[in-house]
Amino acid sequence: MGKVSYYTNEGLQSLKDKLVDLEKVQRPAISKQIGEAIDKGDLSENAEYDAAKEAQGLLELNISKLKDVLSDARLVDVSLIDTSKALILSTVRIKNKKNGMELSYTLVAENEANLKLFKISVESPIGKGLLGKKIGEIAHIITPGGVIEFEILDITRS
Image 1 (cartoon, rainbow, N blue to C red):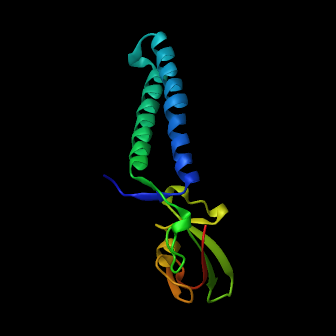
Image 2 (cartoon, rainbow, N blue to C red):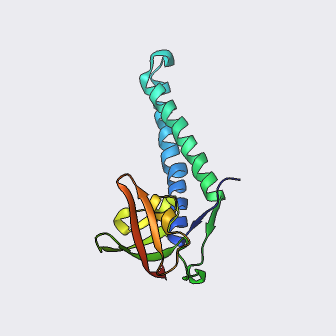
Image 3 (tube, rainbow, N blue to C red):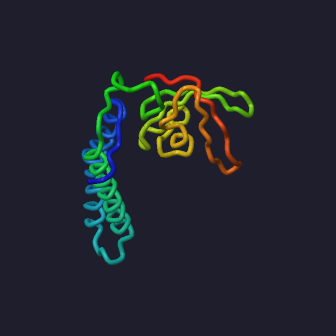
């Protein structure tokens, strides 16, 4: 058993959709490419065959990894999230103590992270720094430019 990861309904469905695409769309397409390359004759000097076989190997590896992730995936009931401290699937409003800038981030599993949507991984430096903090506490986040202090202003369910 690998590392358990927690997902929202949307995040879990996205992983399942990706697996279906890999198995039902991409796998048959690569098999077809291999078949077409075989039809061209001598496999010892057939670059198309070699490329298709390599692509097939990578695809099967991705399918296997995704199945492992799904086997360790757990669905989180957002309504049960404790908002007294920052946890996975919490939305945390923070203020940079140095410049006063306020931001809100939702803490998510690594595979659901999307900075454009302000979803950050609990494995990221900011995510790790926010986990377990309560409103009013200061999170010290280590960055390449030094330590940044963020005050926890609010915690809500995502």
